[in-house]
Image 1 (cartoon, rainbow, N blue to C red):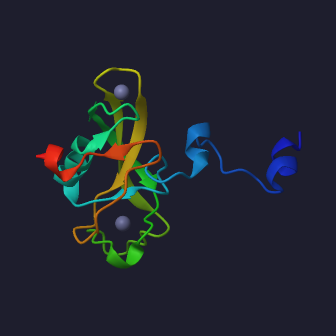
Image 2: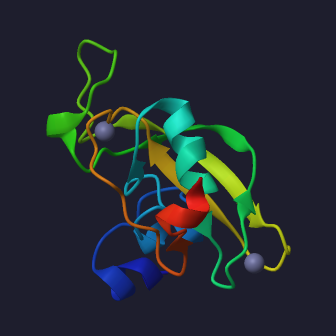
Length: 132
Ligand SMILES: [Zn+2]
Ligand SMILES: [Zn+2]
């Protein structure tokens, strides 16, 4: 008892898996990668490389409740949407082609105007030459 209170001085959010607490860009639903529609998600994944330089592949697992880091540019479809509080994010469980690296990536796909997004921590983006 009092564990969470001791640790953080407040009540924890309920039922969020431990990994999600990291709040790390790309790996958490409240800190998704911005992109344009599902093709933008797949294009981003295709341009990523694992820490050892391998290609990443994996299925879209589904939509989750997340938060938009850039509500001003969010182009959603719901009239009363407040993307800064809740928005749908897509999750992909990807594994590298060599199989030694895997992770879950979260995307907010309602950003057709999003600037080039950086790679999540530990991953790299392929050079433009090899990303054809
Ligand atoms: Zn790898
Ligand atoms: Zn958004």
